[in-house]
Amino acid sequence: MSEQILGFLGLMRRAGALAVGAEDAFDAARENKARLLAVASDAAANTVSAMKNAAAQRETPAPILTLPCTKRELGGALGVRECAALAVLDTGFALALCRKLERSDLAPPLEERLQREKKRKAKKEAKKEAKKELKKAPQALKGAKGGAAARIAAKRARSGRGNTGPGGAKGPAEGRRQGPREQKPRVTGKRGN
Image (cartoon, rainbow, N blue to C red):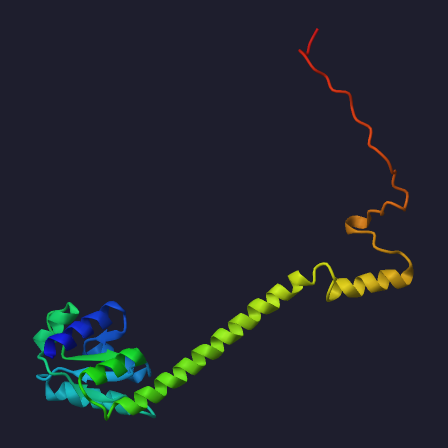
């Protein structure tokens, strides 16, 4: 069981979902980034009380749990010499860790938070898709002239000028020569003499 937990914590470290060490864990708790706080089984009493104080500074304190491993074992799994405390920064990982440790008492608030985060993410994605569709709409209306271009075309039509195009170039009916263009004669061979 302990080996599974340590392997899972190593995975979380590689994913960037952990704040390793007491100071980083305290900072994450104070900044409201910590979803779950964990201490080693042989952590000092001062470390545990400091962790509780850091967690209590929030409106909804992050749950604290004691891991079934020593500081040295925890540090070995996380790539440091020793680690007495850590903070889990991702709600999904925090919930999975609680389930692996069979701490169902900590799971409900994490599940609620995970649902809120999923709704927020879905709402953000919907806004992003709406922006993409909005960007595509003017391209679809290019031929039909929408917005400012439509107002300018309507104004020109009322004034009788018509669409002169970019730079004031006249259309074919307004003084432009119609018919085939004259071609310059081609010179072949060597130049000179």
